[in-house]
Length: 485
Image 1 (tube, rainbow, N blue to C red):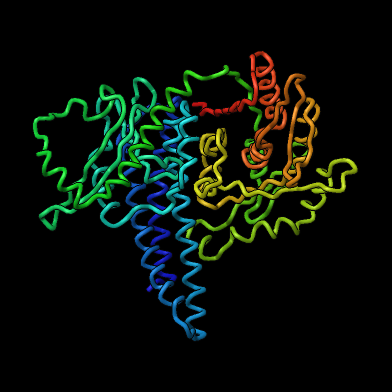
Image 2: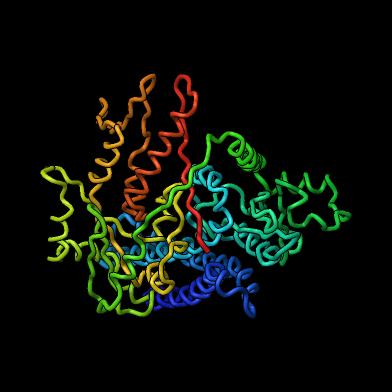
């Protein structure tokens, strides 16, 4: 039965392992300044194994706890004890989900570094159904065993395990070649029981550039008999499901070439961001106190440091969940709200948004953005945010951004379904921004300045004007952000 002591134990155990993963991420981020020291390469290669094992254990405990919750939920007649127990277990399940989110946010930060020059492919991944809960039981065990053996440099290529992320959703692994600095292939894993009860068979289906893939120089003389292979697949695998998975992988590989041959052009925009204001706000701030700072006409950043040192005390006390309410009742915050009011507008939609890396693993990833880890923020401040010991909120009034876009000549209207339309008359045709809320998200969640956003839109308009466009054409504005090492 799940209880507070057990949940605390798994949170504390996970935090120690997550901290080790964090240290490995810092090795990559600080490589330009520090290079590799001692066992740094070993820690980097172990990152995925440690994170994969940790997520596996958390998910095992989650499913065990969920089973008890389901049994109680199905009871037709519930005593007061049952009702109280359901509430208690529900709290533990939410904590375990938050714990998984932290782990996957670390995994996303890790793999994004290798995918940063092929972010268009990430769009394709993010269009697939997410796989938030880690795989356990036979399939998960097989993936971990494969990981322990495959995570090494082979043919200048490193294996990236998708199970520790939420942004990689096609295939089970992908392969990054260090010489070419690009993704060169994908793999799909299938696990089956062996005749020996103490053994399993893990099959790997690979797709990509064979010359750059790992295992390229492996001895192929021990191929198993085709008839045995077919029999095993019939017995253990859902062939239709496997075919669908393989088809998605092939589509992704084709997409990579298609994108490269179909670009209108590239523009470099210097992106002004406000992340350094977070560290400034926290400097000399007493524990458990809020600091508010207005950093632009429509943006307020709020930050707070907790006095609790352990993640378990934060989760079990539910501290982070109540901070938004506390902020809204703060007198200084209320006075700053008046300052970001836009002139005499009656409607000023001010959005309060937590800057929480874990939310990115829960379907809230903004395409074209980069994980918070890769922003130029003090590493200790970053760790505090990732481990829920520092709370950061933004309050944003998007009218300021809308007015700047309007100054470019765009017109804002509502269609018959009350959906916002943003259009620019270019004479022979009209240009329409398909999703204006994307840019609002860049400002309020990723702290990109309005000036940088407007510059992106302006340069896109100029690029469109310089091309011959006939009929109804969709132009994808692909925004890529890169890590500065």
